[in-house]
Image 1 (tube, rainbow, N blue to C red):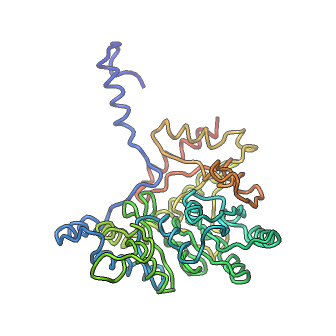
Image 2: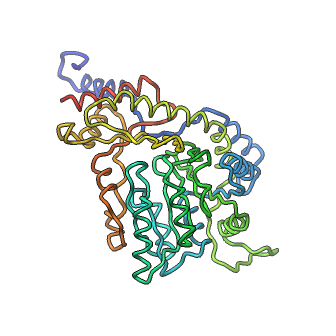
Length: 400
């Protein structure tokens, strides 16, 4: 593209730069989609002056989440990390304990283990769902037992919306008496055999961060069929205040409760969740049908009919042997040149400097995925024209 005129002057150069930026709107990886009653519900909360943490929208959001997930009890909190932290506390994880965690995930799945003074034990992935490998998980259980150790709990992640092999993991937890915490931060609405992710274990966690399939700007939830656990979670999340006419505390508490305003936004978002899931699944199919035909390109897909993914993010793998050594870095750079956001797959936690001294049971799967994978824009409002633009960039890079 040439300058607006032939004069080599500052004004023309500045106008050219402005034109370029106006011309190409940023396409984000997974932006919020506020297309329903969010503002009306938020305004209602303002007008009624329910600004403080407590309020009717808090209970309404919890009830709606319980009905949607099929869980009997829900506590909405300030973040998914807070939910994992409280789950570990409530299940008795403390100093000296060991907790198995998927290695192929975000650090927030493991950080709360350290908050509790416990040791994360990282488990690699299997290739069908990219989540915890049940066989490797059992090997870790048995090896730790031989070393005189016992895994107290496991944080099993449903990565990118794809349910893990939860039935096998749940069976192992029952057999070896290990508490199962499901990290469904990326998997609200996903299911295995018709049952929602997050409802198979003692406790499940959800996230409503700004990039999740629904958002409250920042927030999370703890879900369980155990009413006592959720009641205790609410108590700890509100500074563990005793039922007294004055401020009395018999336990250390936390400021982890979601605000009523955030819950109001959540109520409006949850009303649209099925629509969001339908759209993200359509986006995933379009990527698979168009880019999946290219040599060396593949995508994470549901392994069988029992699995239902919300496809929070569409994730592409590149085989360097077939792509002529073109990898995710080249594709990411080309997309960024067109003002399109993308992101590499998670760097395995057993490779993170902060966790370098933690035990890890690896088979190379997570490292291979990290080396080859890229997350493509998957927002619920991504248009077909925008998706075509993304695909054209990928096709161009891979055809060089």
